[in-house]
Image (cartoon, rainbow, N blue to C red; front, side):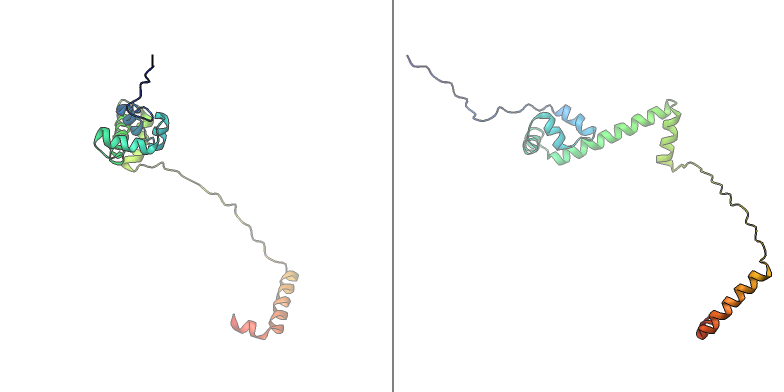
Length: 144
């Protein structure tokens, strides 16, 4: 008696199961296609192809929509925290949306310099040095 071998009608790997709601949440969390494909254990090319086939939309468009949703959900949550009395969040949002800034006052104290007059011998030595320079470089005094 011969044994019959059942053949798989579709050769190759079994079709990957993709939970598109979970993918949407990853995208809302700003995850990349490469990262999500890695989590799912599929190639990025397969990921893109399946998005088009399963959702009838290019992955780029799907990704942009979900990432924008994630940013808006986060913005709304932060706003709700501020409205519920979270003072820190209220201050932070005021800086982000209303242009508020921390006022930083800086005071610089410069010590007072005391100038002492030169003694006559020092003044005479400096005048002699200037005179010698002028005599050795006659054009120098004319330019100044």
